[in-house]
Length: 158
Image 1 (cartoon, rainbow, N blue to C red):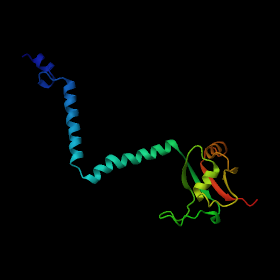
Image 2: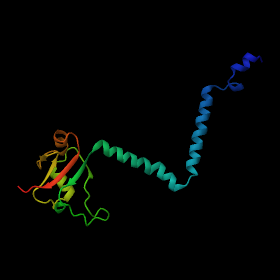
Image 3: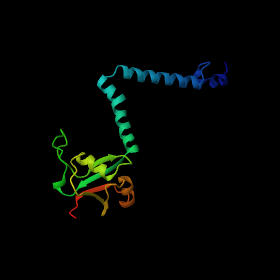
């Protein structure tokens, strides 16, 4: 065999093409991944394969389907009573609520205080604009708040 002919063969192996080499490499890599998964520690395995992607998917899905609003309450006297909760037993200002596009101000207050515990004369405002109970929260924030999702709840004395 001449030198020119031997140099033309890939790696000196007769009958092997570049695609065959790539397929062999991919098969070996997939087999290595399978073995690593099969023989790995089960707690690590299921966290990395199921829980971590599920958490990422849930966060991304919530960001794509709901709008987030930071809610502040002006006076401690109108803070909601969360004493029955196990973990969040006290209201913290700036708490983020994720709401659907169709949510009204009345539904927002019901979500914060509970269905039957909404105090009288509590209003929702943003940048000095006071919302009515029938206003759509998403439309009001877009129109009045310059897309700044910080809502203030306060007691109206009038």
